[in-house]
Amino acid sequence: MGEEEKEEEERKEQNMESKKAGEEGESSMTPWEQHAKVISIPRFDYKAPSSLLQRSHSAFLITCTIKREKSATKEAMSILSKYVGPFNGETSDANVDAKRRKICTEEIDQIISKTVDSPEITDDAGGIPKDGSSISANTDKSEAPELALSLVKLTKSGLLLLTLPVENSLDTIDVVSKIFCDLGSGSLKSPLWCHRIFPIQATCTLSEKELHAVVSKLVQQYVKDKGNKLTSPLKFAVGFNRRGTEESQLKIPKDGSKNSDMSALLDRNKCFSVVAAAVKANVPDSVVDLKSPELSILVELLPLSGVPNGSLVVGVSALPLNLVSTKPKLCIKPLVGDKIGKKGS
Image (cartoon, rainbow, N blue to C red; front, side, top):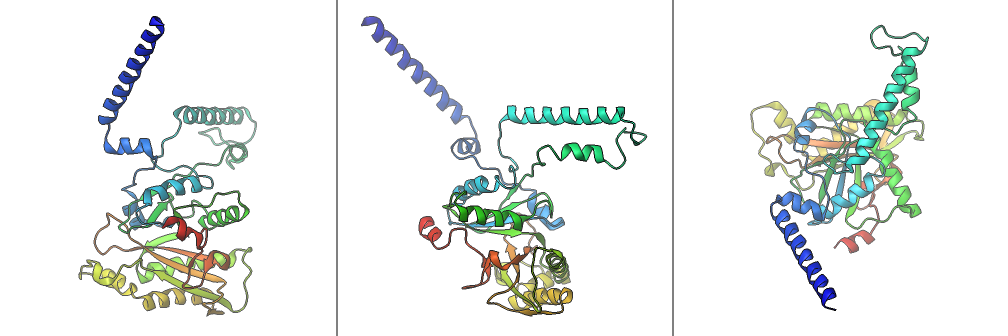
């Protein structure tokens, strides 16, 4: 018994020493690293706001329970990663990534070696077919390229903005449609913290010229899409959400027509008229229908953090009827209906 008691005491001492070492290691970690051990969420991409000012992006704007943004971020990561891919700053298994890179490198080397030995016509410099058919045939069989979503810091609570590298890098409407289908079939678990996912097709600064151009492009894409059954006249509706941002809350300098244009477009009626004009310019046979619109143009003011005063960016999408609700106002459908409000409160 004496030897067993001695071994037990030694085990306890070892456990205490390892626990102490763990606490010392944790105390030397930064607050972010300590938090990451508990809940793994990506860092904010602080370059994203300036990128949104420079060019258009596809994105997802998610509404969630206030003061539960971190829980909602983790939940959104779990949902979107199944349809989109990884996040910028998201940790992953280094061995898996290294193995994936090795496999991709080997495949590329094999493609190039086969191409060099092939009697087909090749470029003088690279030994690769001019039409690129050999490479495309092989790369199509491999895994689709992974897209990295960036988490953007916002100034409003209850919102998450996740941007894709550039506009059209992914069909965001198709992603949200698949999410609704999987929720309906039960293959996707109902979210607790994420309420709505607005699929942003394009972004632009809030100016009449840019907004008109973006809406025109999205309407043309919608009309050309053979999957959309259009009636005559085309019934459409316009929704504009400022997320509580009023002109008086913005420090817009009075030193340029561009800023005054942004200020003017904060008025709903002015924004509605610009969007409606863009729709009618591309589909002359169209009428406004707020009850059952075939096409809904939603414009969302994005409350970006870290942008110059007076710089306003909006997300725009042309949505089919099955993704929107018209009562009490025009907006994207909730993920779980009324139940989500009770669970999230």
